[in-house]
Length: 245
Ligand SMILES: Cc1ncc(COP(=O)(O)O)c(C=O)c1O
Image 1 (cartoon, rainbow, N blue to C red):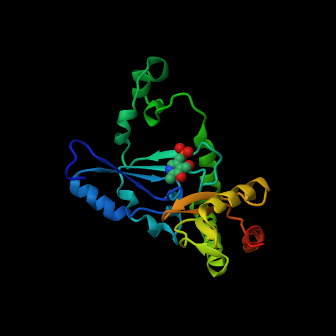
Image 2: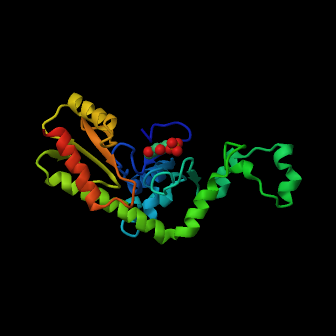
Image 3: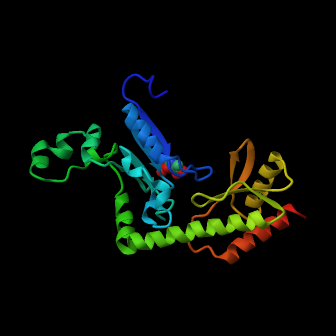
């Protein structure tokens, strides 16, 4: 498809899919894009912050070759919404966002060095969302955030191991980030969807749902770094009680 495309081409990859937390093979995609003269954008809303962790950053090899990256720090950055960021390797790439309006950024003011934020976002009026992000980065630093990320991913791995070892559950796959897809056995999709609603309405557990390999799965997206092994045992016990009466 890339070789037959006319005009500029943008390939969009995902580093952390919403349903399963999967990461596209970024390095081979960057190679393909270079070969065909296409630009690469990576939606790293969920997985981008793995870059801070020495244990997990290898999963994002090739990310730095993208022409643009979006990150969402309301996930592995623990920010209240809104916390989306657009990152580019060279600020000249932001030129298409530029606007000029005398009442906002008179040319002579900009030339005199006053900050001109109109070229940094499609929005003009906005809240100072960057402030909370800056405070978090300043106070926790890269290592502090990496520690939270490592603990969150470890909790997800632990949950996956508990479910895999349990005869009453089927694990879809070991998590790439912190999303665990699983299903009680035996159970069809309709029963599973009903179970999820019951757990939610009873106040037992808030689990997502996702379709993978043509079947419906329960989805636990772990994002609390303070989750303990005991919490996960409790979750599995609650699920056991709801599904295998
Ligand atoms: C992979 C992915 N991309 C983008 C988004 C959307 O981000 P936002 O809601 O901040 O636009 C999400 C979910 O928040 C996501 O999981």
